Length: 155
Image (cartoon, rainbow, N blue to C red; front, top):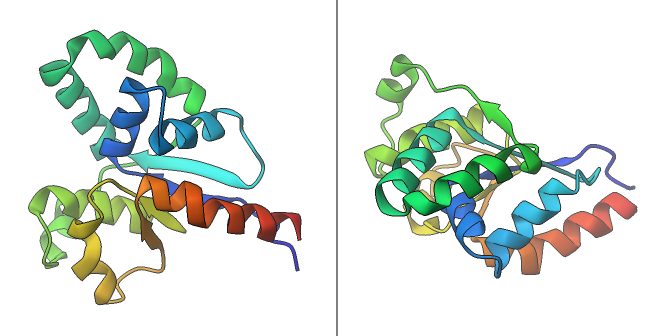
């Protein structure tokens, strides 16, 4: 039976930054697909991620800030609010502290996929079965998962 609702794809900061600064590769393909507002994909990220993106672009590649600000609305991303301090404190996951709000945002947003260039940081989190989403690199998502998503949606 064909899937009727859109697949929820959470984008980590590094995917959005990579897609903004390069017009080639899987991150850009994902951003462009989300910009098309296709019925089978729903993109989202966390408010935490947007703060991190702005900080990193401003600090490392300030010339890209206007491009980011112009391109962001086109991506049609839903934004998950910052996790509460209590949620972050309760999350005793073995992962870098900077990734806990990212993981919580993906959980809170009911992601089907978390697409990240730092897949290794989410391995332990995945192993504990804390969430229901798949963790994929941008290339894995485009090459392996996206064809399945399209096939499932088409029925």
